[in-house]
Image 1: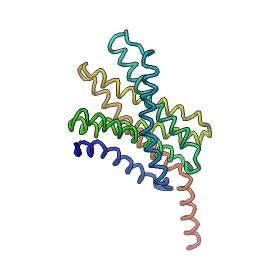
Image 2: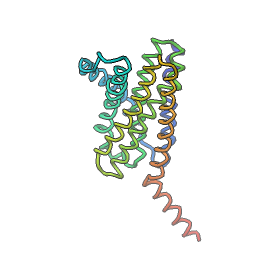
Image 3: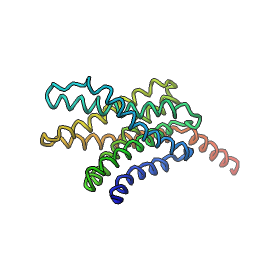
Image 4: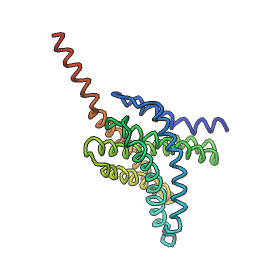
Length: 237
């Protein structure tokens, strides 16, 4: 049991450490990172509440593929990403510590890993070591990519567009990738469809890495450091 728990928790911790060290110019306070992770845990409860509230309204009389489409994009993708989005925008977006575009990715990923870690523990306990090992390389990294996409647009909303509504693009981007990933898994009984989930995951990783590079380069602290180095060189010259 303890080995399963360790495997279930490890990928979320590894991703959080990776994001923390990728924040090169002005790291976020540890207390806010822990708070963000805790918000991710809370978002699982909000997800359950919203799901129970709206489950009677989801279509159930269409073909299996159509039912799975609505389940993937609305019942799972939209509800889960909306729950994370609300915690990000209501409790972290307004903080003064959110002071560079990259912070949107940092806080969103910490929330995402809180959600994914709790979800991973529950699935792994029920499914055993094999489930824990598979999800280590699939579901948990997938949640990180959904969060990074959402966080990229949250950072842009605050410092580039200067309009919180712009962050909705990130919400729908996360829902799109989340829904596509789950949909191909839900219809994996059709030969070859599981490859769609793999393509979605690889594409999400690619866009997440690109998003991190763009926001890291756009950091005002990076520009200040460059000006400082340049002025120091001029003095020495």
